Image 1 (tube, one colour):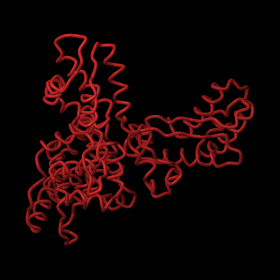
Image 2 (tube, rainbow, N blue to C red):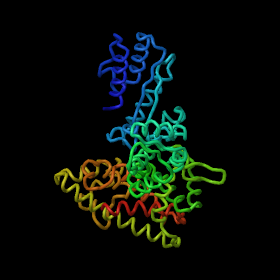
Image 3 (cartoon, rainbow, N blue to C red):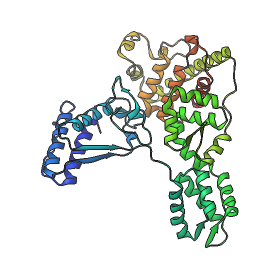
Image 4 (cartoon, one colour):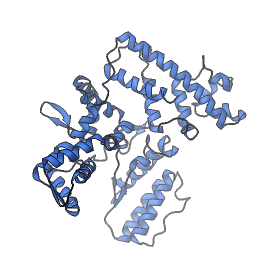
Length: 423
């Protein structure tokens, strides 16, 4: 569904919800040229007929239509998101507009980005950002009291306090911990004291990585910088952690907003004990390497990756496209000027293992542009591939004659390893 079609669907949903007689504009009225104007007019008339001063439209799982996370190409890499929200903002800001909207999701990037496709982001600065807080100690007590009562399991006050300390008020982790504790009880009804609590949590801890990974997995995929910060602080590398936090305060805002970290008087600490233990068991960040060796390693691995990627693209294109279509399809994902520059180069030379005329970033565009053809051969999501390719492409420090900071080197190594493992 394109952006203008979504506007029309919203108008029809509003008409149906309030049972009004107004006839929403047809497909021609909601052409790309006229959709924004007719949407604002339809909303105004529906509000008047429904005798409503305002109505709210909820956008849940906004990631499904946001650039960088959407599954559809036109929402992910084209201007549909931008045009849609320009239209929504125009309708919202019109005189006596009845429209109010609420955006819900796990990734706030779409409202944090100043620019989208080189245009002002219509959501930036116009949407108040709020993170859903963790449960308070009182809410944890209420939850385990209600659920435990059904199962014949009561938690004493000390156990309730420990639940909050160990799991930081995270309802998902707390609920699973309580399940392990309940299974450790030999008889019911039972009151959980410190001894039974310890047995249950010990069982849970040995099997908890999968549960913790379900919580931090989103960070690893959509917030790799924040995930790296957790690795740093989990290993006590406070300097690298603080450096990232100072360079981009939004990173720490995300981690605090999700309740993973908390700010104290003298620094930042883990809010969830079991997540802290998870990261403390992880391998420490890569050891320090001399500046010149860092540059050499990144350059060597990047060049090798580029050759592997060209070879991989060549194989996939040879399987997915007929010989007459390969070159045309390949060049279709390059900018017009570059298509002209490469007009006389045949398919095999474009992807030659040695001296190929294609740039690294162009290889990324080709794979992303034909993701359906590549997704089965690359064991990662489109978002992960785009992120790691971006990190490696920016890691051209040899071309800029600059030292590589610890966290930059660590990031480059991680992304190189992720891509190397799949090519």
